[in-house]
Length: 279
Image 1: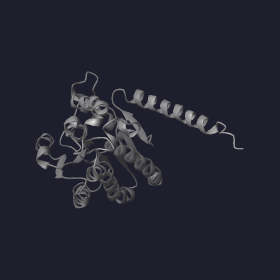
Image 2: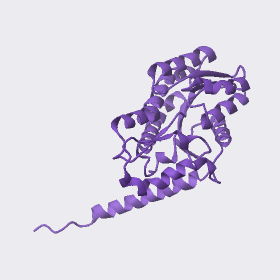
Image 3: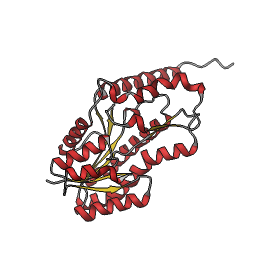
Image 4: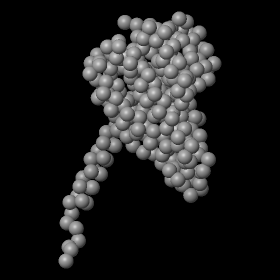
């Protein structure tokens, strides 16, 4: 069966690899990016299978146009992949209100909007698949990435609610908790305007790791991500709501789960301890 995809954030990295792999598999793909000219090569490589469209997920009109175009050109939509993302680097104290709003518009509001737009189409078809590309930051926290962590936690909460809401319609929903991949993510992280020297010691190691992420020896490859996503799309039946993907992802999230259990045990013991005697 030829599937019909809408993938956001296809200019580079995971989105571009996935769009190319889906087209190579014989599917039709609406590949989107804020700068549509970055998709010219992708269209040339897969003539007739990849359609390119400009899309900033923060723009409601562009989101509506993208979904309407996919339905008009493809006759429907089988898979939505909310992949577009960026990051602002700064602590809670350093990130300003507008910087936080922009981060959440990209990581939460945009995916929510696109899901809302495709759901009537998928319900009418009797099924579909929504994949939200999350991160290890969707379950854990990293110093200096407070806004990004907040966005990914919210995205996973939305995914969990959406999966329960749409299961009766045959619409599958999952969050892909991606580990590190050799993409341009480090270069797309911008420093908050209010950076302070007070936090340099606690956040600079993370900032350096982001800059050098693509060169890490155990980093994942976008083509591996694409292959795993196609495998998930081919898998019949329900999917786990959260799916670790990429090198070390299962180990990292398993450790996070153990830490959560330990924290709960500590909290329980704290609250169950007899309080000071009241005379």
